Length: 265
Image 1: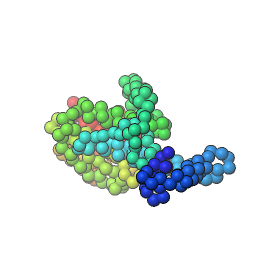
Image 2: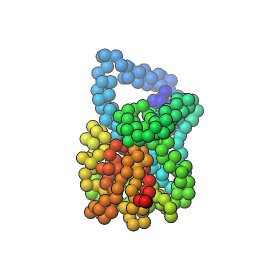
Image 3: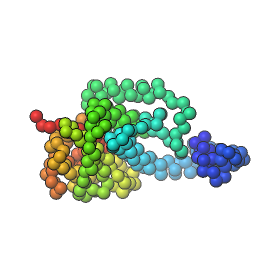
Image 4: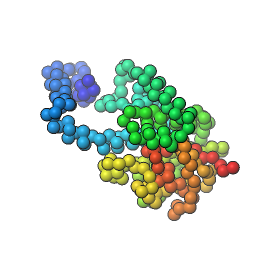
């Protein structure tokens, strides 16, 4: 049905106003045969090999876009039902039923794990099992929880773009939201296919990021910074860019990062 909706909205061979029933039926039959899991379907086996690394890259892009829209200036919006993965070929249709009970159960499970502590272990588990969609729900939940804790920061706090320097500086987007009492820093990877052999691995850790740093300008707190997705602390260090945060530490275990600054006591 997604393919039919995409074809009709493309308005090349069929459309909602002037449907071509024979074309629509042929399209349905073609898609069904193409995706038939039978042993003789050589295309499907080949496609799945191609699909796996591509899906991994799509997961990273989705988490990055999700975190950016929640923490950038403005009011974030999550299309109902897309709290987990949505594989629509076109814009989601708000007339579709949403299994809210299933999403609530996933969220309750995440809340229980968060309350039990061990965010670093939880983050690694979510990364390992990313196809189940919990990793996206977790990203949304943790980022919105941060917004709820600091409403004034996100309502009227300054937007501070952060310079990135070093080996893979072109592959990182970083900015801070800052007011007189608080700062949070968003870090997401960009164009990760080039960094990961086209999705063969995840863009995580020191070995990949090497000498890549997010500069900490003087107007931001010295830290330490706490990664709200993993619970780990990231210390400011001296780099070629001055005082900075190592991307290899920021993105050690989770594909995106939201860092809360807390002044050292």
